[in-house]
Structures are given as C-alpha cells and as structure tokens.
Image 1 (tube, rainbow, N blue to C red):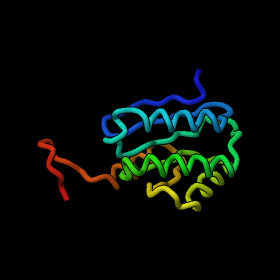
Image 2: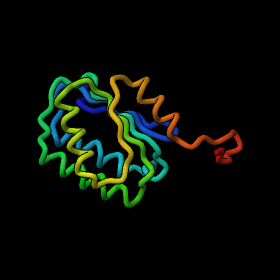
Image 3: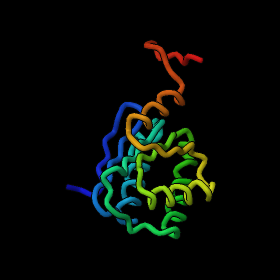
Image 4: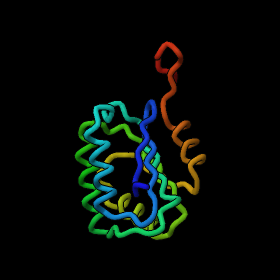
Length: 135
C-alpha cells in the first residue's frame, strides 16, 4: 500500500495518507496534484490523515509546503482544503501552516471525512444542471 493515494473527483481530489508519512511523500503528492492538467479546475482537496500513524514532518518542512502551496495558488487560488485528523501532532502542523498565512486557501480541520465534505458542499458555489451559477 502506498503511503499516499490521490483520487480525483469531478471538482476536487481526495488524498488518503497511511502509516508514517514523510515530508517527501506529502510534498510529492502536492506537486503531483499541482502538475496535473485538472489542477486549474480543482475547487477542493480532502486530505484524510485518519489512518496516519505518525509523521516525520517538521515545522521547517511545513514552511516548504506553504511555499509550494503559495506557488500553486498563483495558478488556482480557489481551492478549499479540508484536513481530516484527530491526531494532535497533525493538528499542530496544520496550525503552523495556517499561522504562516502564505497561501490564500481556505483551510479547516475536521474529525471525519463526512464533516469535511459537508463543509465543502456548504462553501462551494452551486451550479444548476445547465452549468449556470446559482447564488
């Protein structure tokens, strides 16, 4: 099993992390998503850390992640980022990323995927079946 799996969805992606996750694995998954032709249409990212059993990511690594996210935001700044975790270390890393305030992405942490998807559904503009934006 890969430590990080990405599943593309119609307007977003679902990233699932397993086991002990390294900085290189997280960075590779972020860079892979940013290089994908679907990135420009991406509106959300659900990052599921619920099966992560440890992390080798440091606060300095989080600064590098923030810099890459900033670069990606120059192409697409409309992405909602949902982090799914109950792990205190993961919470601390997310708080550090938020505190850096480099990338303009709206980011929230949730205890489960269902709550993350509810937040995304409520925060994204809805379109009718003809593709017209509804307010």
